[in-house]
Length: 167
Image (cartoon, rainbow, N blue to C red; front, top):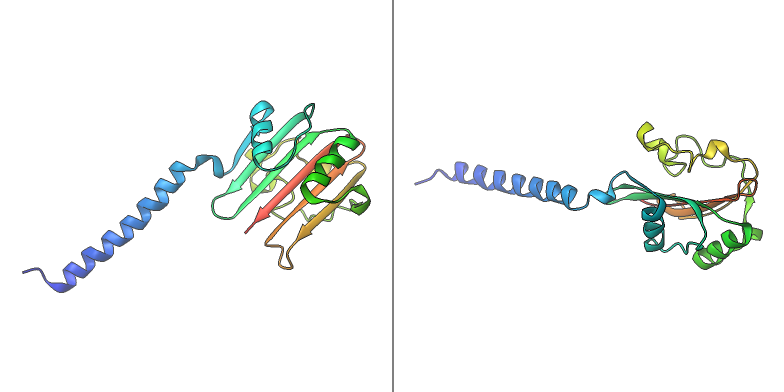
């Protein structure tokens, strides 16, 4: 007859390794949801799938997602002011008149600043807040900053930046 403490230990080990295998399978099953950058046509497809309406002639598209359960998405592309405002109106129901002047409101330590915050391998000139010249920002978030989004439009470079986070 098996000692009850040994049987209990075996059950605990099965539960532990069962949970560990679920975590590992989840990481393998969803590799696209953890620190992945996309460019060009692939980025355009992912941007569209994310709910951001992309103008047909958007240039230099960039898409980055980081996280597993909680996540941050960074999107950027070049678009004329009228195209960018149409995207913003469709997504958030606001226009440029609702934006404020960019004064570097998003701190360097903030995870919603840019992909480079998550490591040098994620840095890209296609999403770099240090290059903004004449930018405006619109931000919407809950009181704890746990969920939200922002749009930034650089009028000088005609580049639209979008970040959506959920923690």
